[in-house]
Length: 315
Image 1 (cartoon, rainbow, N blue to C red):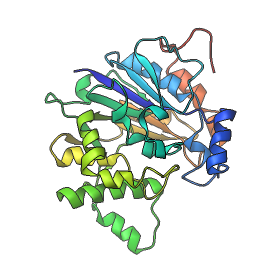
Image 2: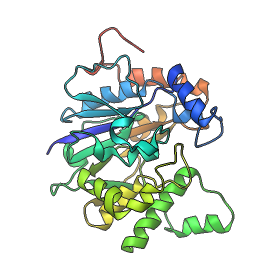
Image 3: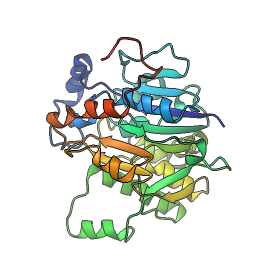
């Protein structure tokens, strides 16, 4: 089968883009999960993620990079397997301008020319081993959904709510997705997504947005920045499982590992678990000093320049 790969990318260091964003949303707030610098900072992760693709997933048919009127200066746009897709090509007009990755993710299925089977990841997600299509899709064409096992199911959330413990925006939106699917199909998926590259079928994606949860998705379109009222893209995974269009897998750190951007030693978990996938996560707790260590770490890990890069251009 043909399998494409989709990224979201933004250069939050671009003064023109920052001026547009600040005028619309206001100045970044360091500790605000919805609008902190960690949501938009560019540490050249995409460059290294593409290197990891060329090294470990040479069978990918095409790579689509979704941006907001931006193109990485170093990107070889003449490469036949890479295509820039602007927000305006896929998002409804009322959603623009959009600084909320959750809303952008609703409309991946609108990418012109996207294959039925595709992978989706953020630019801070990397392939760390040679993987075949069978790692992501079963022989029947349905994707594997990788969840992190959470004990006590929905009760773990209810206990927190009863004790007045506030969930993060990220956890709140995942819980909302799980409850929506449970209300419709009678199955509550208590595992949370592994926060790494996931596999999808375009048919299922479109069904969720255009039919199954059309009204709920429509209600979120005007959320121009992250909101606890968002529906996290876990809804696509839970839906596929509920209707028998996906296979559930509970994985550990040897399959998928999250490296916290504020940790002093980024390579520690790679040495310990040798994961097939890893995410170098930036968030509201990561400092500029932390970010200065990201590029040298990735350069050491993926030093071989890819064909997706122009000659002699770095930034």
